[in-house]
Structures are given as C-alpha cells and as structure tokens.
Image (tube, rainbow, N blue to C red; front, side):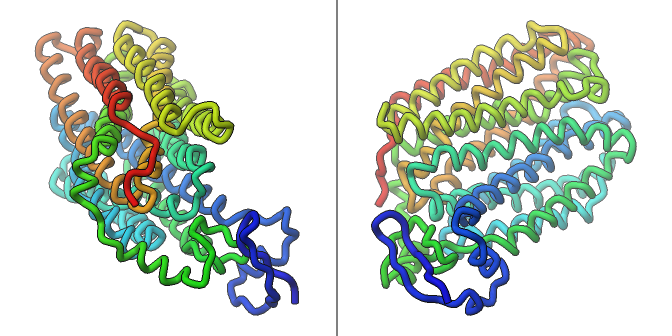
Length: 465
C-alpha cells in the first residue's frame, strides 16, 4: 500500500491505494517510479500530438514529391498537377467542422485514432499512378477527409489537458511537428523515390501512420481526476467530475455567436493566409527549385529541408516567448498575441515577395526559410488564440478556422498551377523570375492584410463560456 496524491497546488487529496489494484501495466509502471521520474500525462499527450502532426506532414510533403516525379515522368501538365495536388484540400475542408463537432461529442482521443487509421489504410492500398486520375482523386479526397478530423481533435484534447500558462508552448510544440515532418520529408523522401520509386512513399507513410496509431491507442487517456493518480486534468477536482465532463460533451454549441464574433473572424482570416502561404510553398517549392532554378532536389542535399526546419525552430521560440511574456506579466495575453502575430506576418511578407529576385539555391532557400520561419512565429498569435477565446469550444473554433485554412489550400495550390501554366505559355518556360513573381506576391500581400485584421479585432480574453 502507498499514498496516492491527486490534484495540484493547494487543491490536493491524499488517500491509500494499492499499486496492484490497477490492471493497466502502464499505470503500474508509472506508479512504481519515483515521483521525480514520472512523466506527467499532459506532457505525454503533447509529445504524442507532436509526433502526430509530424507524420501528417510527412504524408503531405511525401505525396507532393512522389506525385511530382511520377507526373513529370509521363508528361502531366502543370495545371493538371495543381488540380490533383489540391484535391486533398477539398476533402480536408469538408471534415474540419464535423471534426470539431465529433471531438466535442465523443472525445478528441477516439476521433484522432480513427482518422489516423483511415488515412494510413488508404495510403497502403492505393497505387500512385498519375494515369489513373479518378482513383488518385478519390484517394486524396479520402486522405483529406480523414486528416481534416485531426487538428480539431488535437485542439480539443489540448484544451482539456493543458493549463492556460502552458498553452502557448504546448500548442507551438504540437504544431511544430508539422514543420519537422515537412523537413524530414524534404530531406529523406526524394532519395527514397530515387531508389525505390514513387510508390514507396505511400508505403512508408502508411507504416508511420500505423505505428503512431498503436502508440496513441496504448498510451493516450482521457482527462479524469483519477485517471493517472496525479490529478493532471485541468478540469476542477470535485465529486461531480464525471457529470461535469458529460455536460462539457453535451453542451449546446453557440454556433451563431461563434460565426458572428469578430475575434473569431480575426483568427479565421489569419489562418487562411498562413495556410495559403504554407500550402503554396509546400506543394510548389519542389517545382520552383527544379523548373524555376534548374536544380535537382536530390543534389540539393539537406539545404532543401531548411525552410521547414526553420518553421520548427521559430514555432517553439514563439511559444516560449509568448508564455514568458504572459506568465511574467510583461504583456497581457491580448498584446502578446498581437505582437507575435504582427511581427511574424510582416517579416514573412517581405521575404515572400523577394523570393523570385534570388536566382541561386542559397538565396531561394534563405528567403523561403525566413518566410516560413516567421509565419510559424506568428502561430503563437492567432493559432493559440482559439483556446484563449473559447477553451470549452476550442475544437469547434479550430474546425471553423481550419476550414478557411483548407480553402486557402484549394484556392492557392490550384491557382498557382494555373498561373504557372499561363506564365509558361507567355515565356515558353518557367525559369524566368517573372513567371513566379505573382505566385509569391499574392501570399505576401495577404500577410500584410491579415496582420492588420488581427491587430484590429483579436483579443486574448475568454468570450465564450
């Protein structure tokens, strides 16, 4: 028999329990370790969601690389490539709000697992053949629908587990997994395609998805005061905990208030701009290197991963800086969000506009790294703001916001393909800087516009009970 401590700070209870009374071997292992060696469950949840976003973006970058090689091999034009690459985002857009609703009703942990299994199975079964257009379209729609449930579910899980003073760095760490995944994809997958063919990318992604699903199934738990024996849930500890959880899940969602809120729309506009720039660069940067600068991705070595590695670094820097400013009371939550969002988006705007002016691999990598890095810094503004304004409905607000971000992917990726096809017809090839100037000017302008919208209408205060 030993003493078991629940709660934090002054709100704690001590009672006797047996280390053998819990049949879960993970819980028994955690209970058998010294207190200083135990990993708090909320940290484990954040780490798992970090790997979740990493795997998702390895899949997205991987498809872009594998499909580009396969499509170029059979002479698919740029407009058709843009259509296929953007198909994912149609499915992704359709499932954002349903994903937030499902996470609110049945729990983010379950929804996250089911969505991961769906897209992993799809990648394992579908051949990457650019001539089988209908099959590829259906497959990308399915993967898009499945992955559309992921980020609303993650925000629901984090809003339940992470206390307010840890939110900036927790969300930043989780989302930085996207960029590390993209960096690893850019570094490793071109070599895999070169030696094993484009189809190998699908199989590798399916294996990663299945592996993460097993980890999540084994280690993830729902937040309850007695779930882990250390009282880590941010929900209040009392005898009515179970009924409280049920009320949160069954609460009526204030759709009208959400959809007419200016602070929510400030998040939506900035999410649209962030993803427009990110998806255009993610899907078309390989083409810019190969056709715009006449460089081979295989020959570029590790430099091609720098834009996404920079996002990983700056995302976490933004989270740490935001939490420092807030916890030390240097700035209010509202001013902190506005400062980081504005700095990030304005610097990114400048870097995006000047990308075509640099005609070397070093210059292009530097500019794209600055652009994506500072966009990631800006996520410590608008992206964490979901949980500031609506912690109880974070998944719902994230679903609404990410729908706009997904529409940006549909519009931006497809529009870029059409712009490049028109530029190719006018200039005979895509090696001229003029062919790419409009491609990078559009997200640069959107960054300036969005930063002013966020300055005017955002807040760090809770506006939904």
